[in-house]
Length: 75
Image 1 (cartoon, helix red, strand yellow):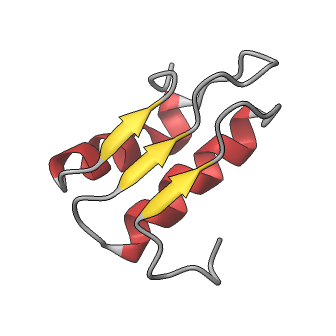
Image 2 (spheres, rainbow, N blue to C red; image 1 turned 120 degrees about the vertical axis):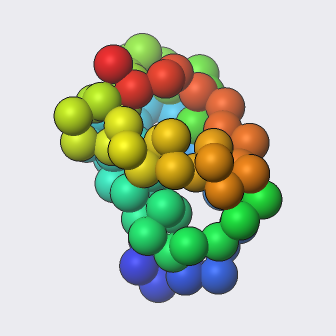
């Protein structure tokens, strides 16, 4: 993800990503600092959710930056 610093529309829905991958996506997009983006990681076939201890701060930060985030809330 580090090769996509200007990415503000990221769709990885309907995949089988694990929690670590979802954490990485949230943390990387948050670190990029962009506002008002769109992230969709919904409908992971394995039912994975981000880990609140790993990416919960990034998830909330993206929301505060105006991002629309679709997918399981970090648990």
